[in-house]
Image 1: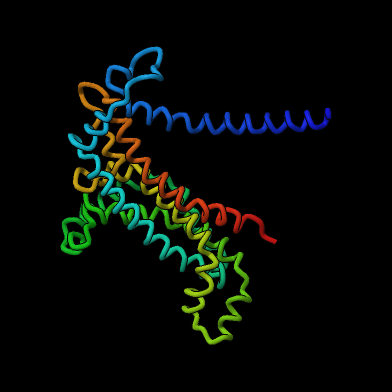
Image 2: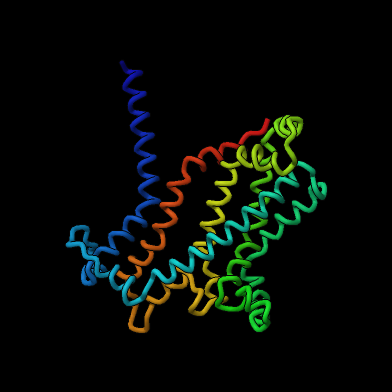
Length: 286
């Protein structure tokens, strides 16, 4: 009986600690949503008000006067495009490193080392490159000038690609070579093996990489603030429009932040099943 009570107490303590940690990390999101629903006079009061009459005025201001969906559209275009390019190039590159040991590990380490470079160290060269490219016919056609989608997409691809390759290599290494050899004996070409055998087996790892890449592109601020002005500005830059000379519009800021977080939360929830499989796929190597 005593042992049963001790076991029950440990379980209650464990779940209590889990609830405490989850509450600690999710409270800022909860408070952001609550603030977005508060009337202006109830936001900056002390002590904070937990009971109030909800209003959608902050969302109306963010979506109406500030047209925040314009920034959401830009973020979707840039983030999805850069993620698709990173996954397409990174998957093929990672497969070559995993199967053929290209560069004997030295090239892979060099690629990974580029990720260690801080973004602030290259933002000025990127600015000058895209400024000059935008003045050429080639750059204009591909939207590679300042305040254009192409400049942000290329920047995000360059910064996300090393991490994606490094992450995907471990997933491809976990796939037994014998499966590919069997498929080749059955008459499949190398590309057919990749399309029908290797990539489907590596799908959880590819999904995890896509999630991390998309989240980074969506949340990135430095490149978006320097390389854009108005036309291609993303949600991280759009939130700045609520910081006015008269003060910070906390209600609309919270509403805009809630709108910007919602797509990523929905995407992660959709990909949750694949993420759990992918995070454990290459965790243990025997």
